[in-house]
Length: 133
Image (cartoon, rainbow, N blue to C red; front, side, top):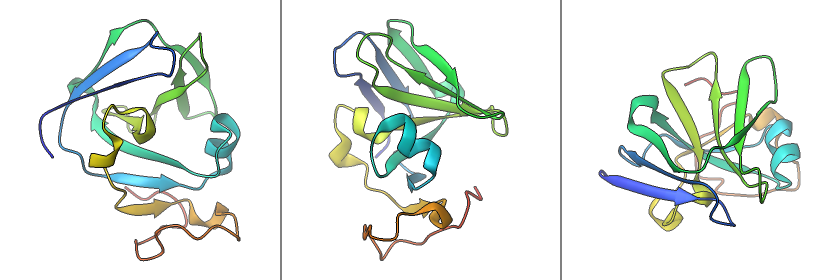
């Protein structure tokens, strides 16, 4: 779905918007996403960086690896986005923080080599041992 999409954190301190299609959506199974989110999987959409903007609040940031900066709410702790230095022209946004996440189904799995062995989630989707896009 093309057009303007909006989202934000749980407490409302941070809000964002982006004008880009809802595609390139992936369930990430990496251990870093599990640790920083507290969830068993994090679903991301990759958006061109120029199409994304914070419209309310200033996110806190955390270098979760040598190549990745994660953005989260300094008030409620919700993880909202990340930028990898390997692809600085884009920003990844957590699907769960969209105002309408039901409009953004996942298209693939990434980091499947880190997948929890007991998790069975959208097994019909293609998977990548690491992220290749």
